[in-house]
Picture 1 (cartoon, rainbow, N blue to C red):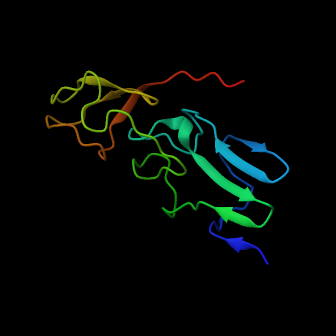
Picture 2: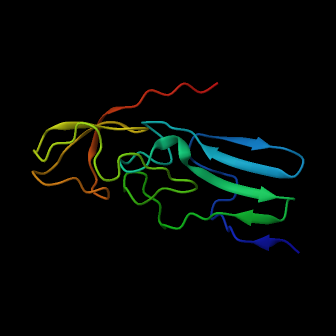
Picture 3: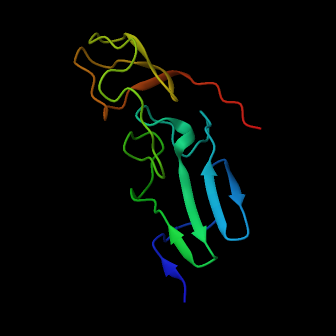
Length: 134
């Protein structure tokens, strides 16, 4: 009987751009960075670290979409590795409303308040990062 650590609500029918990496024993679904339709388009986590599902030996499932319903624009709605760079002080950040700063793996973001950086705030992505996927 399969062991379930992951219970995907939509199975393998993801509505987001993704690719599947697999071997004889392992299957990994990776959500691709996409500024228009990507699984994650918020400002906290870098967009290429979103792993949607891992299946071992067709019976053991890892990961879960822990925020339901999922909203790709909310900073906490990452999945998988959900890497973050510049959590405390991203390059170029100024506590000035309207100023722009770089979030590595995301792009250029705009500060929405005259306040110190808050890693969980929903900063607007003004210029998404450029990705090349082969």
